[in-house]
Length: 192
Ligand SMILES: Cc1cc2nc3c(=O)[nH]c(=O)nc-3n(C[C@H](O)[C@H](O)[C@H](O)COP(=O)(O)O)c2cc1C
Image (cartoon, rainbow, N blue to C red; front, side, top):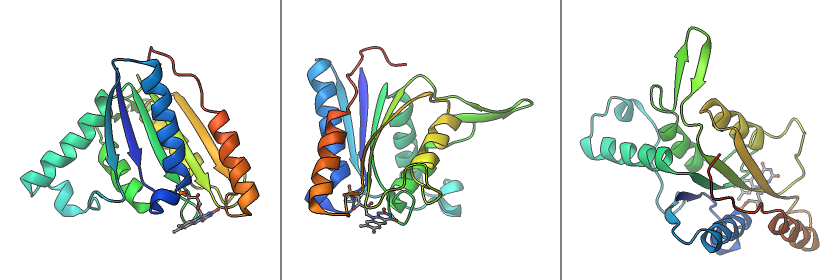
């Protein structure tokens, strides 16, 4: 079984989403002895923006890296994404990764009946951290975006492990992280 672990927080050791994503992955590693984990830290090892040069595949090394990123996503049974809210949406480093996995003909396609996701047979777990309270609020362009995006790619098994309001006070931060850690779902061997 293959697990892809992505982090994108710029806050290093103080990051809430890094703590949550690491705890989720540790839980899977404990439950699945033969688990193969691939990790990418998009903060220390960012991908370039998807610009015209990249779309044209003008640079063979960059094109090979893009293929590697897409392949890593496609082959994963479980994808754990550390996704902080930055300026109401996801960090631009995470968006750069998303731009490499949302590829027409590979992870989705358009048909006469509309778009069709091609990457459905996997479980996606989002470790979400937000400074304020945004659930069901119009300010939330982070979780609904991620839910829609992975749904568009065909993924129906999406779970959010959320620590919200972490900037409100240190007490609130601590209880939000404790609650989020307690809400981590039990791993199941079969991918959805
Ligand atoms: C650059 C930056 C932008 C942020 N923007 C928002 C925001 O728009 N709304 C919010 O509620 N919190 C915002 N925050 C707070 C983060 O969502 C919060 O610190 C969360 O814990 C981030 O996850 P992390 O600790 O893993 O980086 C921002 C933090 C940073 C560093």
